[in-house]
Length: 565
Image (cartoon, rainbow, N blue to C red):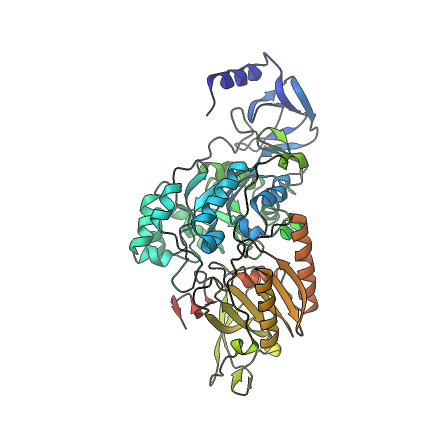
């Protein structure tokens, strides 16, 4: 809250009675109302813009001649832990790309560590340079069809509700529970009617009406135009997602018109530091949308003003007096080429991230699993065909096919000729030792295996491979690392990335994680895997709230029927 003296200081600098603390000179400001580019200095006092469209003197003048000033970008839904680095490394990666605010859901960490994860992310949010807001994870566990490391009830969430960094209730993934009026699910919805994030892939008709009637406000799982049009028509705010696996912006870009833009925003959901380094963050989503037909003004409005208003952040989203001085300076609007970022009134450089309060990391030793043998992955043959998960590249939605598989000694085998690998999910929270077994098509492997302790949403160990022996070797190396990603070929570990914090995050700098991901990608390409990010794709195969066929530690799961096969 600003005191009288601070307000007086801002007014004095706005009137030009005294020099502004900082002046950006030479930029044109994108008017998010009309789309016009307007000339004039941008005067800053503390973390606020106090003047535009006028001339100002400043104690510090920054020459930004030829650049275009737009508001800081907002990521409307992100699991920071899915960036594989800590929140402090996450901001080092995304802020220079123009993302100055992010709305995070620590859902992945909470499924491993419960309330300790919520406390950790709130402590980080208070110490970070960027403005990280936290939604309270609503579905821990996501369903009863898997084994999670923790459980959060309404009584666990309510003590955090009044925290200044908390926006509301995070994605209400259990939409079947809402529609079935599950008392525990409705108790959470009832307590957070001021803001509930949604998660409703392919939901339509009366079930969508019922879901929205519970107070849900947005959705980031929309993947096709007709689905998007229905949700917009029913008052739902859409977050167009461009993650490492789920890439929906191109398909939904035609929705991004000037008329619809107040009801649209962008999000990344899950995006690796390698993806950010190579392609960008929200800046990538903006230029990708424009390249696929979105109106330029609509895209920038969605990335800034629309997101800010949707989440109740009325102090940002415009380059205008009184607004928070989060400003991105670009040299080309259509290409969204970021040249300079101003965060809370100060230019972003490496020193921006120095001197922050430290928050001790949590979650070491979270992989509680005994070593396995090849025999643990044996699966008896069936007469006839069996269900197989079909990967759809660029989507976390999966298909289902039925295939007849080779048999050896009465056991079903992976089949490289059909591009079908064996897949397993192993409970890793020390609760029951479950192993769910099945088959998956789309990894392109001729040999070898890949394993991950990142397995949405309960984050058990997920492994896919062409031989039981390689699958066992990959899992055992993963256990030794305390979590991470492992690639094995002919019994040898060919690449790995340790993620010892909850089995989800590295404690190393982002650039080292990026290098590790490059090595893993190269190793998987040597193994003929065609996927851009195979470990992230693998991580979504245990997700039993996304259609159509998935696998958990309890076995193959038909999401459409919401039952184990």
